[in-house]
Length: 388
Image 1 (cartoon, rainbow, N blue to C red):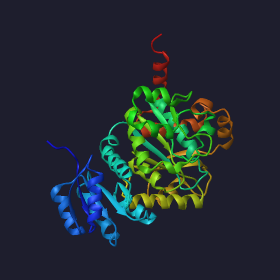
Image 2: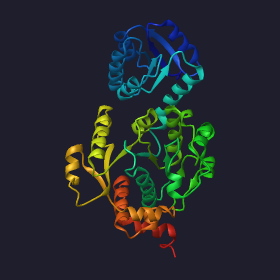
Image 3: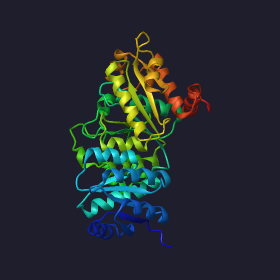
Image 4: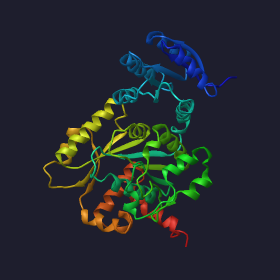
């Protein structure tokens, strides 16, 4: 029985069809071409194909609508947009519609094979394994990195599972500075090792913080982040999900294709806000954007960081603005974080009795479904306290 994935091309350009057929022959069988959207939709439905390649030439809006329709009725079908230039607006519209990637034509054979292979692999890899939790804000300076670090530490404390803190700020991240560590193994190294990665290589390479969670961050110097594509990021996450129970992602403050891909495939996206008008307006736009992308409403959650009880913006006010219940409130205490960050500590190790530690503990408990009240049991169990 032939299990090779099947694909069709919707384009008037026979050359595009021939090029895709030749380039993808090792991994995909292109079974047909049709010149228009209507017949293409019928063919995709009747043949129940695995992949559809849409030529955006002169009919981009129709292609976007096609992608929405086919993903609604056949969510397992991978849709690829093909165009002469990577138009940012079309990229966003395509992602909202559920497209897997945007291929620039004429294209290189290796790039096309890699993109299609990653999409096919994701169908299995990103639906299995560990949980991806992204922490995001479109505005900088609201505490995304601080929340990601302390969430990773508290999730490990509650679960004792394999927890990875992953820095998606590939240009130059802040995690190393916050934790006062130099990590030897970076996302660039993981990308190099994706094809040969196994459990032994993973856990002999990735650095582990004293608090128990693992850390993968960028080098201390400025890095060439453009060399890492969105497909590369998803390949890495697919591998990481095989080996870690939780991957906490510290996201950049942008709507780049990489960031949107990660948020799309995350199980939970924590959007961070503060009680200021500019930040609230920014978060409101982010939530609306994610709604336009048809994210599951329960997937996107809001955290108020540096929460002030006496603020004129109460949590209930923000819930009305966002039309969403606030997931967690983390109190404001800049001196505390300045003190523990100079030591490279997390809240649960540098300020265990502080109110903010209990707030992080409650947030981790709500995320994992493990009551913080049982935390003492786990600590006793793994420290040998129950077996003396």
